[in-house]
Image (cartoon, rainbow, N blue to C red):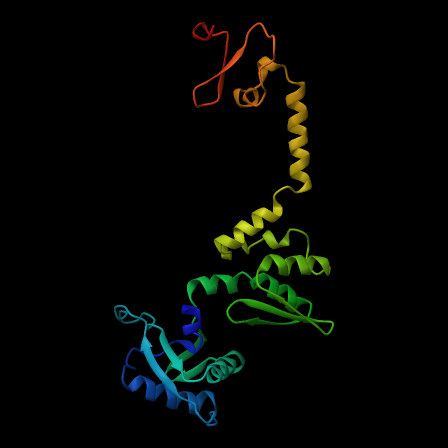
Length: 248
């Protein structure tokens, strides 16, 4: 819900602290029409609200706080961002102004998880777009593919021979959400190397004499019927007592 409410917002960096409300909406709107849109705004172009990020004003010499602007129409917001991507930064008085979408931290992390994938797509001249809030659209061979998480995108790249195996583990994990990391662990659990290691451990355990096995290994083996010294399971730490006086 919060991400949807921010859809018409733009985060501007660089506006001096001297731009204050209530003049900020009027000043920003006039500046955008003249400098960014070249005097050709849409019919209903309007800045509904503009405000600073809450907090103490910065000390002299420090960067000014971001300015958040909410547009009446999301198409105007997209047009502003497109102009900044292609021609920015723009000048306001003596300051360089940049503009970015205003996302929540969760959405920002989800979008950042596609960074290396987008880099790989650019290297192969494949068209792509990052849709709201965090969906990757890829167009290849006249077919459109939509990916909602980086794991599926990497799988597709591997299948197309556009990425090296396990490349998805290099650098993207820090941007993953907890749910994405959990999915990634489930996907890697039970890989052939893991099964081979488990089989090797079982083989070694089978060939190891019983008295040399660890307590945790012995705990998994049931007592042998008719044994002279019965191993007894004692306390909650899963340890076996062999021939202990209290257990005779």
